[in-house]
Length: 192
Image (cartoon, rainbow, N blue to C red; front, side, top):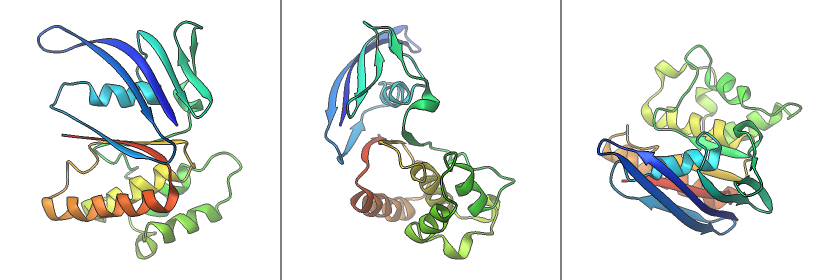
């Protein structure tokens, strides 16, 4: 379960925008945050991931407190069990599909996990290909695979389909739904 009760004064084109969020996401749920550009959706994900620090409040995943302003606790982003899927995929251009997946392995994690993930994400015929040779949907599956290989406690999607055409967006929504049902990772999906 993700529990959030945080405040952050954000700056936008007009001035300061206070963001005040209280949210509980049940374990294994997939919830969507939606709203117009500039409303703070991405900032919420960045605060969960530890990439942006709230001004005050508390944030916990399962029973682990990741941020608590009252107790001056703020776990670094690298120590938070997060899978984060960005809009631009963030694949390494000089690495094959398999190398991109293996790069995300935790220290001591078995390389056979990569093979299992290749099967799960249906990337078998693409393992030796470089990112520039992949379609948008294929890149997205590699990015999803890289995010879930670390077995995160929470999965954050930041408008991950915005760079895809309408047909591919529908296919990838179904793919994300299929993977979510299979893995049951607590997830927050940001979209317009």
